[in-house]
Image (cartoon, rainbow, N blue to C red; front, top):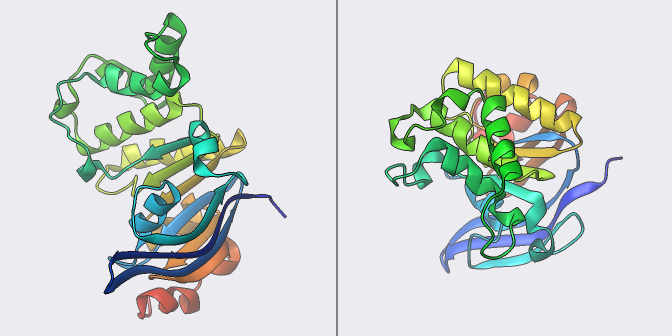
Length: 239
């Protein structure tokens, strides 16, 4: 049995007193997995990961990460939000965006060193974006933007990577680059948790599954959790 990287107990989240988004969430996510969170639109998938990262209010319950409170392990977590939540018109180059991933490793008022810049360029190369280092981020395609933000996350040298729909709207080449990197991270002992939307690629891309529709319908290894009966619990359809 793998140790838990995230332990959630009795989590409830409401947008207001009349609208509950997440209800009685109890969930243990094991370390060193590639975990997909799936469910219909409006099921609370993004809210779940934002709750883990303390980015939402009006929540009750407890969340432990690496058996500690979030504030004690922030430097071990890298988060990639949905592309739609990013201001892509901000005047900054691709390289500078990726270099921002090193800031948590810098002391107050310390500028990035040569080593930090080398790490940033290495991350760009891993995502096959080194040729775009000097380009403004607004000039990139959707898939290229996603690769840049994942490169920034790689610069953090985290143990836990949390991504909100990293494959949404990307081209097939980008999809392969991203998923190859997830596999590489897992081989290095890291944990990847991603909100995902394509049920057809779950077995190919992930080894752990969380099915959500305001509460947890199923959570477990993909080989035992992915079946029509469990999908029906969340989607109420026969795929």
